[in-house]
Image (cartoon, rainbow, N blue to C red):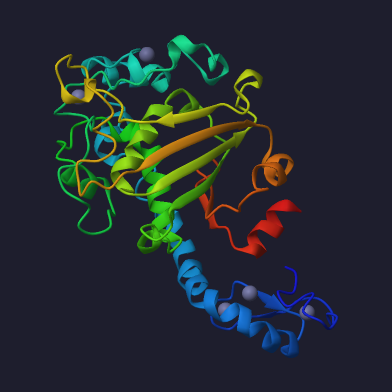
Length: 312
Ligand SMILES: [Zn+2]
Ligand SMILES: [Zn+2]
Ligand SMILES: [Zn+2]
Ligand SMILES: [Zn+2]
Ligand SMILES: [Zn+2]
């Protein structure tokens, strides 16, 4: 790690071996650089301290996959296909990539496959805005299902782990309480794969971040050439199967039934590796969070030391 006090006037006295005793997130070459950097570091030190503690919690990530709906599969009571078939969601809608029968990531870009429907009744899926705001931070699928009034046997968590992983990473990074102050939440999402065919599920970010403009850059080699740079505005939630449900009419449902808080979710696709695309993508503003859900769920708030280290 580089000395955080580098460039503050005097030259560094060697490698940065002394860590800040409070947060442990930054290092210094010398006591004098630590002292001179304190006026800058003071503000973020407390927040970093919280964040570093939370890094351990990432191993316990609650929203990575659904206990409730995968337990039967993992116990080999039924195959993935029959699990999906029983629920009427085999090879349809957002579920086409959930088994090996049909599409794979390599067929991304075949627009026929990009769906925005759950193919479930509106009792079983979150196709409209929440009926109440989140009372306390969601910590498990149970919290989530209860808040969204969805029965636990619903399989939606299989797909919602993408947006809820983003939600949870924001909480862990200590940004949860700040989202109401941040007018635009900028996230770099590294290495998207299957979720590239399920982008409509990110509409759920309207529900978990009411009143926030969420902007996600999805960066990875799985983004096909012809989609590089594509911008997708998600105005609504993924739809249910019912033709006469409210979710079929207008965009009103996404701009939130609660408190008239308007929100927006915009995704942009970038082909390539993060270190090659980083400068280009961040030239106007740095992200609040960098997340790589397919790499064993790594999340970093984008403090300068992290960015520096990602670049090198
Ligand atoms: Zn130094
Ligand atoms: Zn610092
Ligand atoms: Zn510190
Ligand atoms: Zn199948
Ligand atoms: Zn609906």
